[in-house]
Image (tube, rainbow, N blue to C red; front, side, top):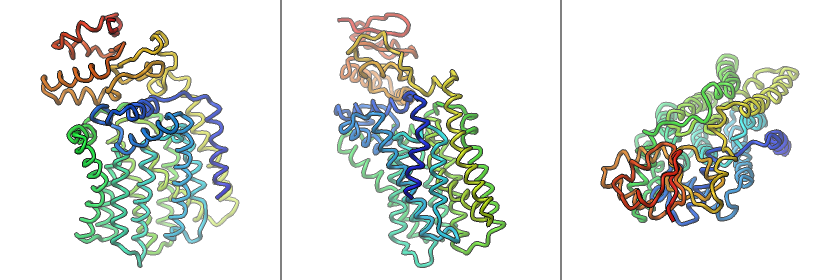
Length: 454
């Protein structure tokens, strides 16, 4: 496994040499951490859809390392190492293959090179750690002598924590319920235990926000509007197809060849079904994603590694196995590297990266409120806005009556008191038309900018 460790480091070097700029989501997570450490309560004082446990991690990381990109890379590197080693050891422990091997770890290392943003501290990556722990309990239930009660309890608990890190992992709850019923034959009591344990982490978050008098904001912004919000495409569908088509094609080959050419015992048949369904449900999280980007699909790597490994184990010819290994080692990273080179020269990449030249005309030490989804201006100025997710903000305000909306806007402007408001969406005038105090406090400079009158 030491070789796996060094291979992961070696394959990341080209990405670090490409001088990839900070992305819009990374800037948002940095801003979220700053607001957390400044005493702003997530959801109540900051309108954003990031999971409550992810926001907590960014707040702690801000205190310790100021949410630097280096800290994002180092922490995510440790999480990825854990996920790789845990997946490989899990497959060995449940006897997924005839002989124990480290091929799943090798394949997962290669898969993480499909995009540069897999090596950042995203909510999807953090939540995936707990999804793997939940999946580990589910696979252990395929064993004849498995103790079902603690396994079911932990499975639901870990999956519930994953949901509190990343909203789109809600799509995995039906997976655990269906596979428990259809594959493992859960009783009604076991099903109740699964759902109850799944809700425990969410209930703990709800109790915390209840104590902070922000339960309605938490539930509305994270759950209700999390389903309704329109997805923001940082990358196009064709880019996702370019990145993931080959791994998914290998997965399908591995699945069908394993079913037709490999004699499996009962436990292995269950594992085969569970991991294929797990892959399908993880792909289905696409419909709950608030931002469309490669890093959101990090949870599909364990089942892809499982089925791709079968392509090696089915073939008994050593030369064929070596050829496939070298082919994967060359082609998969090339897909990721070439995609970055292509994107850096494409205008569409502006939707994903942060333009470091934006906001250079903003006076130093000025506080800024941006009323738009583009966060570029925050890279050069101090953020003075609770509206980190503007699409969610508009949806949130649309659900309020006029009086409630005015009170919230008045409170936010009074608390933040930004020196400059950048209003690309032309909503500031509409929001403050019945709040004379702020209409006359800010001067319209044109081009969607309002500067505070001294």
